[in-house]
Length: 157
Image (cartoon, rainbow, N blue to C red; front, side, top):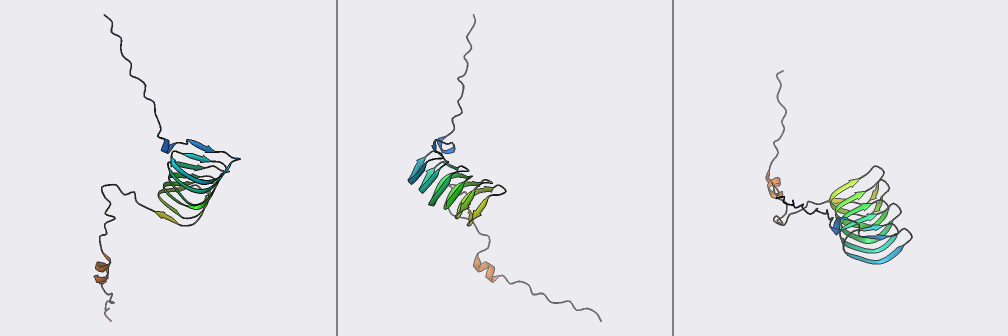
């Protein structure tokens, strides 16, 4: 007579490891070496070495990174970084200090952030379109175009 109503199983919002912190390098810890893999890391101490991470890197206010190159999906800097950075997204917070060149798709800073280096913005190229950007006028076409010469109009005297 009465049917038990089946309740749907609750969905758990699982955040992929690439966009959440899965490891922490503590404030009183220093590490030298190579950091690779998937996942996110929060650096509160000192890290010296190379970083090639498929995920998130957060450099805390007291954190320091000294490297030749940092590669990651997202890099958020609140401490000091002496390295070139290649990432899809780079954020430099107001307490962040960066000495190095940044290559990224998305870039943001807060007032008070410090960057000594160059920023190179890249477009996120989809898998379908790897041919590169389409230019409307080639260099040769631009050279062939002749600008009209400006001649003063004669006025009646």
